[in-house]
Amino acid sequence: MGAPLPEAPLDVLMRLWCQECGRPSSPEAKGWRLYRTDIPEEDNEPTLAAYCAVCSYVEFGTSSSEHTESD
Image (cartoon, rainbow, N blue to C red; front, side, top):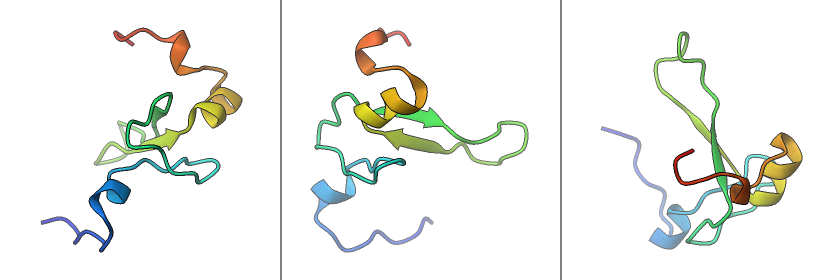
């Protein structure tokens, strides 16, 4: 079984937190991007890092508006 959930309102637990600036997402997380950070050949579990729209653009030069639903 996984680790116990921290005691906090569910809407806070379900938010993303930006890897770069630490800001929490809105419940909809519009414009946020997730990037895979593990090395598939070396790590047992996949891991993701969340970036807000501004930090994603600064770090990777992309914004959610540049991608289609099939990306």
